[in-house]
Image (tube, rainbow, N blue to C red; front, side):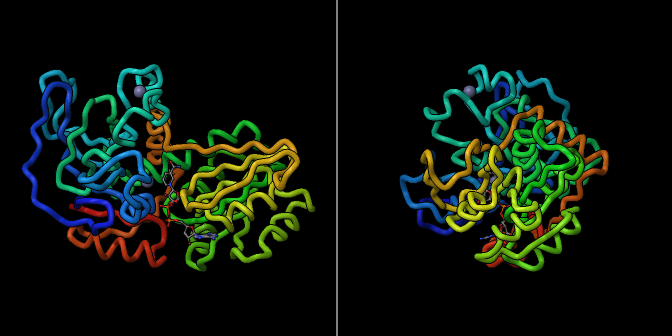
Length: 341
Ligand code: NAD
Ligand code: ZN
Ligand code: ZN
């Protein structure tokens, strides 16, 4: 499933199976998640992304090692997930498995697997190095694939605020889709805080409740009042915004407590004005987490294997990728869509 050029629809194409060289590893894809970021990429105007087509989409992959180059010390047959934010491979951050914050990111012509380099919406994906692989044992592939982005990004976003969350803290999760439903579960599994979920869709609010949210509320122009009313007027200690539109940034700003955290994960194109004094409460911390580290991915896999996470995913054959994309676009999915080649 390749994006041929900016402004063109992705197409299913036949390509030769890649041959791994040097330290490369060939993974047979068992499942690949579909992310709203794929839609952002497909919809992007030329020049707005730090990479270029053509490339195969797919940045959320679980599969099995089938071959490797002579310099890769891996075991054929082992089942793995792929840590997707491939960086330069040699800076300090990359050597620590923190490719998501690669020091040479600005010089690279890709943002990761399936984002400028060939990804996993295919039968096989060529991984540049074994260091991007995390073993999954017998974890179901459809559960495991979404852990690598929906799970990892949520985990990393929660990790950034976790030290400040106590039993008297309240966190608002805005947007309970692929990422958001796992963020709710992680907040419940890893912190004692109270979780309020916000979405525009009833099915997403029901998913939030199944995921453990204490309260779920439909996004309206009044939602910031709900956030204040449920926190005795103070506002919430943290907002995890998985939408990032103008209206959700506005909600986050109005609903946040002083000395609170506004965590922007969604790439919805909204803009926020930062000014002192301004609309943000005093002491606000704003962060823009991107994906997560390799070690964090290993933590997420362990969390899933312990039974603490329940990925809600609808499965589609890879050949039905366009149908899955329409379902995501039209808000007909609950949780993630996972494609099976
Ligand atoms: P998704 O479509 O599965 O979920 C988004 C949810 O937000 C849906 O349930 C939708 O109903 C809800 N929503 C839409 N508008 C809303 C509004 N105004 N108020 C409240 N809820 C609203 O998308 P996803 O795959 O979970 O991705 C979420 C966002 O995160 C996307 O913008 C994606 O590009 C971005 N993302 C960022 C990173 C990162 O590293 N920062 C990683 C992955 C995805
Ligand atoms: Zn993604
Ligand atoms: Zn690097």
